[in-house]
Image 1 (cartoon, one colour):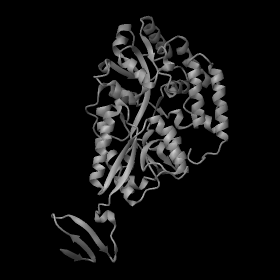
Image 2: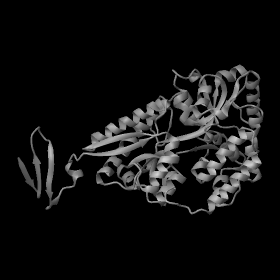
Image 3: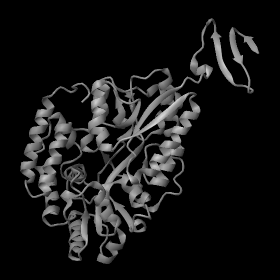
Image 4: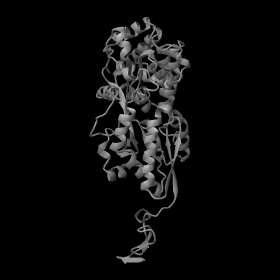
Length: 443
C-alpha cells in the first residue's frame, strides 16, 4: 500500500510495519538515516583488551558492540585486538602517517592526540557530545582537547601508587609509610625476612618510569615535565637528579625484585599476587588482575597508598589522569559517523562506567551518581585519587625522549650507569627533539 502525505511517499510491505524506504521528501531523495535503510557496511574497532586480565573489559566492549549493531541498521562491527604498546607505538603511528587508521581505535591522550589532530587525522566529536548531552559528564577532557574541540574520549581514569600486602605488613609490624624514611624502613624489614620488598619488572622499561616519574615529581615538582619540553627546565637540574638518586637507593639496597631486567610487566603482578612481595608500584588498572581470586592469593589482603612524601616540591601529588580512551578517524562517511555516534552512546554511559568500576576496579572517566558495590581496594584507590594529580610524563614529552629515558633506566637498574650520566643523555635527546618540527606527518 502507498501512503502520500505532505509530499512524502513511503512504501510499506509485508510483515507488519517493515519499512523498505521513504522514496521522496520534497521532491528529493530521503536521508538514509531517516529512512532506516539497512545498507550493509562494516566498521573496524581496534581495542587493546587482549591480556587474560582484560577479559571483563572485553566483554563490556562486546556488549557495547551489540548495542551499536542493534541501533544502526546494516552495521557490522569487526573487533581487532592489538597489544597496547604495539598499537600506540607501532601500528597506529604508521597508519596515521598514511591516513589509514581504523574508523575507531584505542587512543592515548596528550601528545599523541595533539600530533594526530595537527595531521588532520582525528574526528572532532564535540558536536556528538553536545547532541548526546555528554560534555559535562566527564571529569576531565583536557588530554583529548585541542583548541577547544574534543578529538577523543577517555574511557577510564587512573592513578599510580603503591599496592601493599596487608598480611605482610602485619607480619612485619609496620604501618603504611608516610615518609621516604618510613618506606625504606618497611623495605629493609621485608628484605630481612626474606620477602621481596618491592615487586618490579624491568624488561618493559615503561614500568620503571612509573616509579621514576613519581620520584622526580616529588623532588622537582609537577611543572618539571612541561618545563623540559618548553626549554625552561633541564633533566640535569639538581632537584630532578635528586629523584633519580632516590630511585638508585632502592636499586643499591636490593629492595627491588631479583632478576627484574629479565621480567615482563605481568611478572611483577604475579609476584605480588602470589603473596611474595610486600609492595608493588603500579597503576590502578592493575585492580582487575589483583582482585581475581582464582589467580591472586593476596586478593583479599591488598591495600593501596599514595607514594610517601620525600620532602620535595611535589609531595602529596599523585600521578593520575584520563589518558586512555578511544578516538575516531576524521575520514568517515555518513554511515560510519552514525556508527561512531552509536558507539559513544553505548560505551560512554553510566551503566558501562559503573560496570567498569565494580567488575574490573577501573576508575571511571565519567561522573557516577551511585558508587555502591565498590570493592574495598577500589575504595582505597578512589580515596588516593582525590589528591591533586599530575599527568604521566610520556603524555607530554617527545617519543625520542621517552625512549632514551627507558633505555637509561634499564641501564641504571642494571648498574651500568649513574643518575647523572643517564640524565645527561636524556637532556641531549630533549634538546634534539625540541629542535625538530612539531609535526612530521603523523609520526
